[in-house]
Each structure stands twice: as structure tokens, then as C-alpha cells.
Length: 419
Image (cartoon, rainbow, N blue to C red; front, side, top):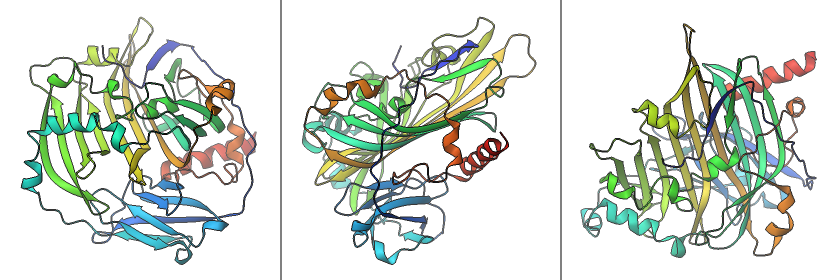
């Protein structure tokens, strides 16, 4: 059965926790800018817009409301903010001209399908194979240390049951290396209502690692193995643009005669470098039994657990002609049926991780800090006290919380005050 970055574990009264390590943070003076990115014509919020400070690797991404928050060291306040989004023209703004409630408008890119360039490739599958084999030329092949923000939520139907947030450092191995990436936990907080989870403990296998494994170029084995490629149908969609560059769009889905659960979605490939810029895809969960085997490690005998939705997204950024992992999110919905119970339970597990800064590091630091690394099976333990401090994250950049997350954090703060 195909590997998957997430593993859903159902077990009666099974709770596993690991301690959170918090390291000292160097304090610098900074300014925080908040705002919203919207379509210039419709005024619709633009989700997953990418914001990076020019000449640096500091950046963030807009949330599901199109909103962002960016902490900028005082030494960089004269720099330029670069805003990009798939299907839109790039926009550059002087940071000094932005206020704490800026509205940034992006103009849709007008793209005509270039039949000549598309015809350069025999078919969409050929283009994808070239992209997967192109990692040595266009992806970052240095050891890098990436600072990232990770958020994970568990909901039972529409009510929040767990909220976890963390700042981590990713020790990213070169794309040409077979060595796995490592993750170091810097700062974290978590609050879980175990009563809302009933007697069913829900465990996310890997936490931040799950999002890291969506990096298709580094970890193609989670979706496009040599054995699986012939089981897919590939086709071209109309091209689009990002940062004024044409982007090929490839549709993929499993062939009609294939019964095992595979993925379907869209891949976005830069026409100049043949680098994967974005991917949006889902697992075919029509076969309940087989799709559940991809996520369920173990469960009580009297319960059926199966996914009803499994969607993934990964974005890449480019710097000095080299691409690297920048953001990913995962949304999983599971239905839980207990024998003898009239109603079922529905759990939604969502997570996202954004790279907020990075630096090349070809020293042997990974080996020296190995004792501080977290394992792929680590679960963040409860550290709810962090929610009582509005300045908990300090100078670290985070993904601006969407409205439902803001509401959840406010409820946690009120609970902490009462106790």
C-alpha cells in the first residue's frame, strides 16, 4: 500500500505526548505589518499569496481570509516587499509606504495558451518526468536551515478540539541528496479538549513532518513512484502565469481501470526552468477500505474509521535562480462509526507550515544538534499557557490566524483566565 505523510490512529484511551523544548530567542527591534491581499477587479481575498522582503529570505503567506502579518527588523524597513500569486502579476511595494492595515491589490495576468511551446513536449507525462528529474539543476542543493511556522487543528464536526502551533527549524538536505530532512522544535503551544474527542484519541503522525513530506520534488515516493506513473492519466490545462513567467498546468488522475486509491489534481511547472512551482491534489477516497488502510495504523475492533476527504497543497519559492519548498497545507476529514451508536463522529484534521526565513548552512550543525531534533512520530504535548501571552511568538513570523482560529485562541485565553 502507498505511503502517506499522515497517519490516523484510532485507539481507546491512547494518549502519547512528548515534552516541548524551548530555546532562547535573540531579541531584535522590529515592526509588524498587517494587511490583506485582494484581486484588483473583484476585491476577493487572495489565499496563499506569497510575500517576501527583497534581498532577504524573510517571508510569509496569506491565510484563508487573504490576510497576512509580517515582522520586519528595523534594519530592513527601507527594503521592498514582493508579492506574488499564481495567475497574477508580481507587485513590488516599498515597506516604508505600508501601514498596519494595508490593502494590496494584484492584477490578474492575461495568458494566452502558447501552442508552440506546449508542442515542444511530446505529452504532459513527458514534461512531468523532466521536472522530476530536473532537481539538480533548478532546486537548492545546499544544506539549509529554514525557520518555519506550523499550525495544526483538530475539529469534531465544526467545534475545535485541539489547536497546536510551533516555530521549528528545518535542517533541509540538498534536493539531490537521499538524506532525509530533520526538524528541530524551537517554540510551541498546544491546547486540547480531550472531552470533545470522547474516548477516541486522534493522533497525527509526524506533525510538521507530514507537511514536509508534501515536498514532491524531495519526496516523490509519496505520490509519483516509477511503479505508479503508468497508472495515471496526464493532460495539459490552459497555461497561467506567476511573476510574469508562463506556467504549464498539468492535470493528473488515475486511469479508469485502476482500483487502488491514487491522487488527482494539478501541477504547475515554470516554463523556463521546468521547476514545480505549485501542486494542488487530493486522494481518491471512493474505496473506503483501501483508502482507510493508508491512514489507519490501528483501531478498536468495534469502530470503523475511513477518510472522506484528503487534500494537499505545496508551494515553492525561487531565489537566485534556485527553487525551494515554501509552504504546504493538508486537510483530512474522517468519519468514525462506533458499533451500536446511532450517530457517527466526523473529525477534520488540518495543518499548514510556512517557511518564514532560511539560510545556507554547509557546516556540520545537524550532527551537533541531533539531540534537539524531534522524531517523525512526535506529538506536541499540551502547553496551553502560551496562549495567555499575546507576545508569545516575539519576533518570529507566523501565519496570520484566520477568523475561526482567532476565535479559538480567544476562548482558550478566557479559559486560562478563569483557571
